[in-house]
Length: 163
Image 1 (cartoon, rainbow, N blue to C red):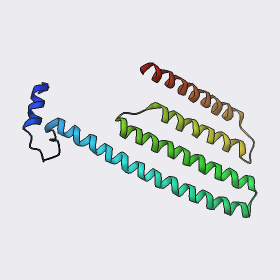
Image 2 (cartoon, rainbow, N blue to C red):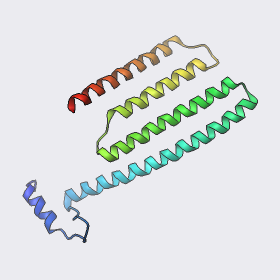
Image 3 (tube, rainbow, N blue to C red):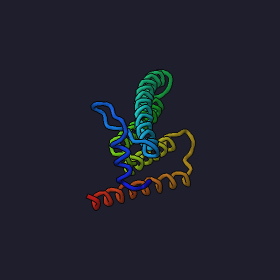
């Protein structure tokens, strides 16, 4: 069953349509279906995330214009910055989905970038908030930035060694 010759014979004996390779049968066929279904699901998720990013940009701009009229420019800019950083996070997730579709394996760097942007977004929100800043929370967030940057450096060095 695990013999490559048997698998090749099963593929060769499977009926195929002209111009299309034969689809494997049995367990190999199930794996083939799952791999292709995964690609379709990832593509749908990617398109949905792009639509979400567009909605976030439009709603952020509308809220910015509304807030400038009702509040201070600083408060409106903070809200817009929050939305745009969220859009950046969504865009990085889309990039990760595209890479996983292209390479058929997960790449660490986009996940680290998403985490780094999310922490920076949180730092900006904490610092721009109306209440006093909790120093413990701020130090924890700064430590997370350091950890993510160290992770980016480590991944970059590891990828260079593989090449």
